[in-house]
Amino acid sequence: MLMPQIYTENDLLLYLYGELSPVETLKLEKELAINNTLQLTLNSLQSSIGLIAQLEEEPSKTSVALVLEYAKMISETSAEKV
Image (cartoon, rainbow, N blue to C red; front, side, top):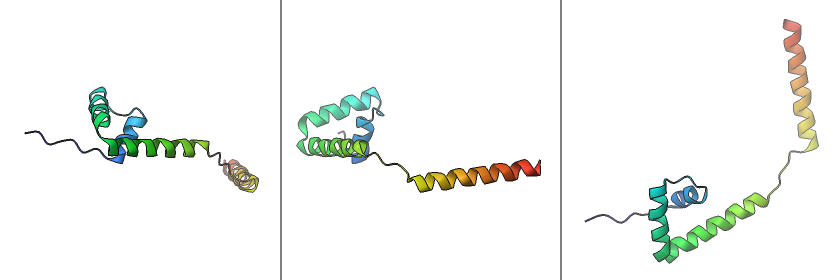
């Protein structure tokens, strides 16, 4: 007797990002068709991914300036050693 497949959130994330094999995708889709709890979890993950995609985080101008200043200093120091 075959043991039923237990799907995790990781499996669902792999599915959402198209990282499962075609065979595994079909198996998961069959389970989704009959498993309401799995469907709810998938919907929750889809919503979370959508919210994360809406975030537009950028570094502060001060941080960018400090990194560029440091890179310039390192470049000048390296050039002096040559």
